[in-house]
Length: 117
Image (cartoon, rainbow, N blue to C red; front, side):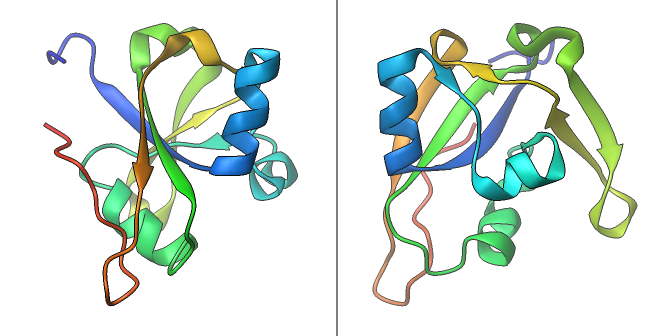
């Protein structure tokens, strides 16, 4: 993706992503719903986000979405260390997901990410 339409990433549990594909809408995890928004990260933030919030968790799917597709429901808000993180206020339409990639664990239980370039 080019700079005009950057991508953001979300860590979905496989069971929740599978259900979303049946309905066409992804409402996020229990944690997302409790916070009132879907947590997204940039390519520079996602690896640390996975280590902090989904450490050792198997059966994750990395969702990639362009910021353009999320429109005004996407807000950049201060979080960890003052960094701005993308938060989606609303459900995610399955149709706008550019790529959904399984996120396996390596032998030390760290997530193995695809190229995020």
